[in-house]
Length: 277
Length: 194
Image (cartoon, rainbow over all chains, first blue to last red):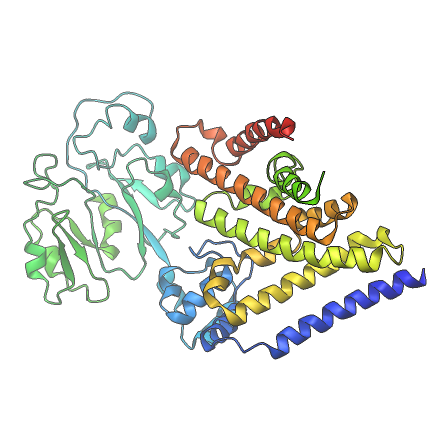
């Protein structure tokens, strides 16, 4: 009996001494790791991997190298917790604007492409998209049967009666992303809530005269928006022959909106008006 | 049977016949958790092999020179847990301080292994088989290699399964379980090898 206690205590003691010795006498860890450790102390530590890094410590290491990672790969758990967020702010020496990380869903289609035939089947976009890739002429168009409406928990999506296209009301949208996963056409995306202009076309194929043969109001690649922008915020993507928007430079002046002959560009704050146009 | 053949027997027996995962059903948690990508599987396998080797060395010394002379073998589980946990801690600190690249590759796997039943399992198997220190080391390397082998096979299959057309209700873990069952059946075929 006595030996058992003594041996267990002795083994425990030796282990403790060995750990202490390693901790004391090994060379100190590099400076970058120390910073990462300070950041790691303010992370949830449950290694869920939702931020895109394999565990909280890897995320902390990425944060210590570049603060901006927090905005591209935001930790949602930290964002929900006031204390944790405050701790992380002081560790990173920056201010996080919570509202800037809010997202809004945008349906990138403005309709008008016309139908191949009339569809009278089940009223679900998923079913309709399986049949000859949908009844619309454009394969990247909104089918308007409202699968997104059914999943939206905040009742933010409506179908425009004239164009038969789903429109997300940015004021009601919470940015949960359920509709993004639901859409069989993959034309709904989450954009930062402070985005000024949105581009409402998802056509992805390379073509000679973009959009025109499929859609009455598709992007035709005329580059008028690109030329009109006074802030060089529009980058012309040669691969897709469509504009891309640099939201850091965009001031929301509206020059491109006025220049677009097909009304594809729109202020995010004006999207709600599309519900009842 | 001379000493060298018995070492080879122990090694092959641990890799194929008494495979940790598929025959002994130890270490199933990392088997399903870390077998989604080949790269992760290899890192995990290397980390487990390393820890198994060190743990077996330490516990074999303790078993042969402390537990048996004092006739307290019944304490092996609690002593082994203590020793393995401390050992992994020491290894983690050492890697972290000395080699940051290795730490980034193994970092998150080491704490996971601390309480892994495969690591505790191999030390207890060694103890109950009455292995000497050298035999323990060989059997630990064998078990680690076997674990890595199964993890690599499984990750290869699961990478294929990701792109295969599987009924929606079977995607992910269910089909992985079935795959594991078939793998276990296949490994039973090694039973008559030695």
